[in-house]
Length: 140
Image 1 (spheres, rainbow, N blue to C red):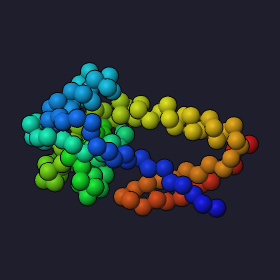
Image 2 (image 1 turned 45 degrees about the vertical axis):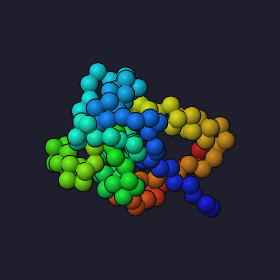
Image 3 (image 1 turned 30 degrees about the vertical axis):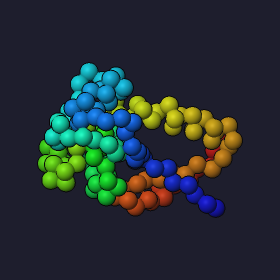
Image 4 (image 1 turned 90 degrees about the horizontal axis):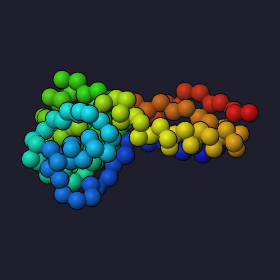
């Protein structure tokens, strides 16, 4: 059986030219959040982004390796912010719940389709680039 792992980190190019401050305002508007925090030089130009919903500080090194200028996530702690600064990675902390909401609709649709097909579902846990099979469920 061939398993397809679902990636919880999305990488991409930003359409347009933004400073970190401008891009943070854009993210704030698109996620409909009242406030957010960011770490990094507010005037730095950001072109490539990574998005990890929830608490995604553990993917900062991966984002740097992929050449990202900015990581959008939630629940950034003080020492994680300091690490991001040392890596020259800008991070936008838009909140745990707020960043997870961008994936809820897509995930619920995939689950609905799986139930309709009565197919095998696999739960995967991804930690520090290692994927561990937790348990398989047969939906009936």
